[in-house]
Amino acid sequence: MDLTVVAYLLYLAISIGITLWVGQVLHRHGRRVLAEAYEGRENSAESVSQLLMIGFYLVNFGLIALYLRIGDDPLTGRAVIEGLATKIGVVLLVVGAIHMVNIALVNRVRRARAEERMLQEMRATAELTRARQNS
Image (cartoon, rainbow, N blue to C red):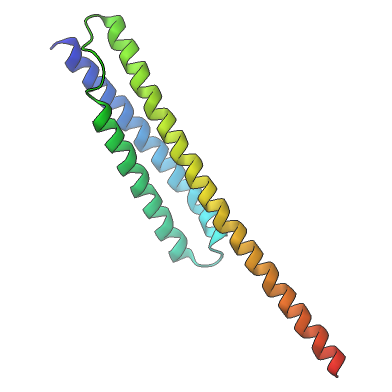
């Protein structure tokens, strides 16, 4: 087996392993945050969590597949390691960027829900105040 095939196999194993691990960790811990954002609507929170996980996997596996062939064929062990480091580094950066986008979106939902709750409380307080004034 030549060094290019070895590099491909190592790249695929490491990149796919990292993506699966990070996806599971984000899904497991993200469900709690989504459950809070979707307060009491567990089905909605779980559905959003599943959709985010699927999107995460599709983007990352697509990047991994597209990035497989980029670069020169390694001629030495050192070239294999350097090529792997570069490719895996790019995959990690993309995984991190996708994670940050997901966090930003979830925070936007949480903020919108908090504002909605505050408006409902203000309306309820205003109605109570009016009711007391009228009685």
